[in-house]
Image (cartoon, helix red, strand yellow):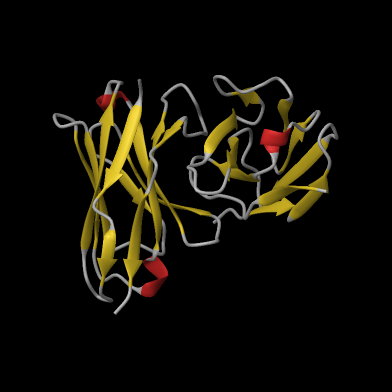
Length: 104
Length: 120
């Protein structure tokens, strides 16, 4: 079973700052990785699929990179609506434990 | 407009059973793999199960294997999750989600979720 480990658990930043979130797989998942955003009381929303492709309607400030075991989600300049929990997912099954991006 | 609407959640006693439904609209349901994902209160997302286009193939998380059964009725555009031998650890919001064939990894639409509470 492939385990995804996200870091940090919490990221405290101010609007306008750059956010960098990490997801590490216990073994290679090639490029089979997705990123989601979830706000309280809402279903998750797909941000990036296949490691680096933005989903429909996702702003360009969200970008993804990586392959194999190490992946990164970058939010270039945080908007107020970006404060949420972010999850990575491998191969359309298991998820990481999440990173909360909170307002500093 | 793509919509996924879950139903069937509620309070059930330990050891009981429940069947969840996910009604799909706004797209050709039979063209998509479908998944169930759950989220315990205050916790993260956990993949539960997936089913292929015509229901001929299904996979399950180890935690539900042998207790949960995923199925679909393409004529009714509906996905199901039959849950048996429920325990407190199954308490969660259950989401259905769509997996587009052109994407290797990612669910592009999710339902709003239905809450299952297992308690005496």
